[in-house]
Each structure stands twice: as structure tokens, then as C-alpha cells.
Image (tube, helix red, strand yellow):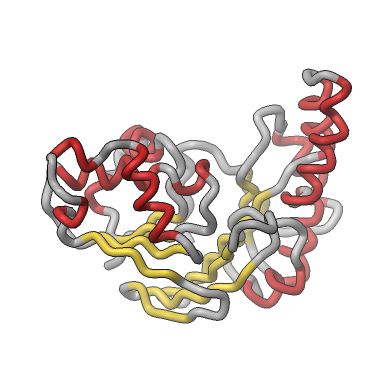
Length: 246
């Protein structure tokens, strides 16, 4: 069976170890977009692969994933560890996936759509189906019902980013007043409020909404209150080590 990692931020291998998960068991990495907090951990994974041989690993990502990985590995000087060309990493491959892409990954059917996050990167959301169960991962996105409601239609679990207005206000209080307008504008132009994630979940008829990509100042009760304005299904607030059975 395929064991897929959805995004690979810095330190993901330590988080896996803390949850008694083996990074060597990962057979594929599915990247939503190429911001460092979602993709830079690929360097850690590839560094590990230099010192062990195992099953093939494929990175599936948006446009420019191949050049991103090459640049990240060069920046990290990974090739100097073995003094060999990076092609020495046998069994590692990169496949670019485009909006509208549909494919099989092991026993999973995967469908991809583009979502709006920032204008300079292609950002992808995906639907995973296997054994009659469905999980949808939004990646980073603004409120995008046209893309995400059809993708998440009837899903068992929707993993969607979300922030609360209360957390944003707490974050702003710790910043110089001159920077606050930029914080509000930037967050609302490139991310999704929790209430709107609830709207997506409601309109798509999903059973469970998992809120992720949380601000450090978030409080669970604020997020739940915001989502409840639009969604009456199960709400889960993501945390390190969280395990879900679908």
C-alpha cells in the first residue's frame, strides 16, 4: 500500500518519530505548493535517502517542483555529503501534477484542482479516495467554494486551513501599529477564515472538518465558535501527533 505524506515542512521527520512513524515507510510526498513551510522538509528526506536504500520515493508536486528541489538540495549542500552527483539518489523521482490531474497512487484515486493562495505559485488541493473512504486536503487557500465544494463533495474528512479573527487580533496586538494593516491584508488575501472553511464543509456535505495551518495565537474555542456559524458536523482542531481513522 502507498503511504503518502501530504506536504513536508521543516522538521516533519522529528514529528513522525515522536508519533512512532517511520520516515523510511514513506513511498510518496504530495506537495500542495512550494512555500518553505510545506516543502522544505523534502531536503531532510532526501538527505536521509543518501544513507539508506529502500523502496522508491516519488514527489508529486505543482509546477516548478523539480527546479525547487534541485535548488533546495544545492542550497543545503546535500550533494557534498557523498561527493557524488544527486543522481546517486536511486529510486527518487519527481512528477509534476497539474490542475485537473487524476491518477492512481497505490490503492488511492487522487484528483487535483487549483486553489487561490498567492499569485506567484501554483497551489493545489487534492481528493484522495480508497476503500470507499475519502479525504480532501485544501493546502493553503483563500475562500474558494467554486474549487473546493465540488472537490470535497460527500467527503468523510476535509482538512482545510483556517484562522479566527480573534487570533488575528491577538497577533496584531504584539506588532507595531504600522505593521498591523499589512498583517490583516496579507492574511485575508492569501488564507481562509475558519467560518468560511465551515461554509465549504457545509456546502460539500462533509462529515468531519479538520482545521489546520493554525496561527500560534489560536484558541480552540474561538475556531470552533467560528466554524459552528456555518457547519454542524464534527470539528477537529489539528495538533502534532493527531491520529484520525477514516
